[in-house]
Length: 126
Image 1 (cartoon, rainbow, N blue to C red):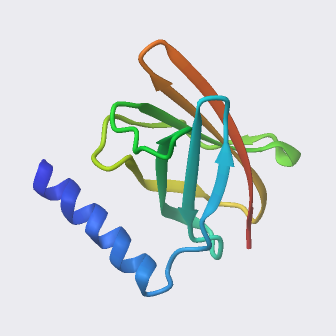
Image 2: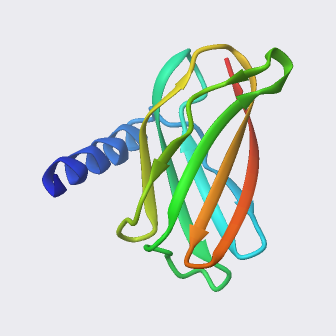
């Protein structure tokens, strides 16, 4: 399991180095800052990488993060996806299905202990 996860993360990093990922998007909540990276061209499944740090910039490894892609203008919800603790504050959602072009709201819920934050990031899929 650890080997498969490491391979998946390394594949994502390699793909991003080759230009298969869009520009990183950074957002701030009350307690955390996230950087989200995903390919914004094409429809269908794609990996989404979320990097989570605290207000001091230290990686947060013990979070539970849920990603809910929402397309309000068409009343669409993709299934919510949840990932648990990581290393170096990096959380990979390997198969996020964005099957329609337009503006999606990426609703990201972060739970660390008794702290829960919600960040919403608009993303245009072409």
